[in-house]
Length: 243
Image (cartoon, rainbow, N blue to C red; front, top):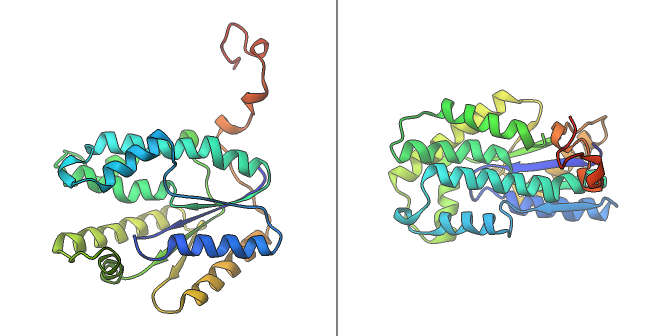
């Protein structure tokens, strides 16, 4: 598949959206056709997730329902936005992709007292993701110490940090490290707190250009290797695709 695919990951408040926007603007100035994709879609699915995440914790969707919706929204974005853009040769920049599902959804199951663990949820998500996810050429993992990230969140939202917040931030950082160990060639770690925003943006740009300058290939699941939208009913025979 042509095109180039970049994702940004990291805890809330480390600068993912800022870096995605800065990189988009700079690449456009250099003549690239770039599309930035937000975390959740504006579809009914995406709006349902946003409503669940911003409601009182006692009114949130239960973990299984929320995880299925998050996965459905990632699939929606992949099928309707990411794959078509990549086929057109665009640079696609995604603010959080499937890595975030691994980071945050297992915590919900454990938090709500389900008899499961992180590894079991990982296996379940692997089975879902194998069907539709597109592996990014680069995933920038913007990092900060858990307490630094929490301080920025608290400052932006005006809330106090609790011991539970610290515990969740530490667990989030550990899961990101697990993900890096599973696919080290894809991840590029960048410390977003020890330098200026301009310096971080320059580092992100240079790393992107380095990888873009090499031979790269985007592996697409079989689901997306053929454009079924161009077929007619006669191509399917009895209304079913021929395998």
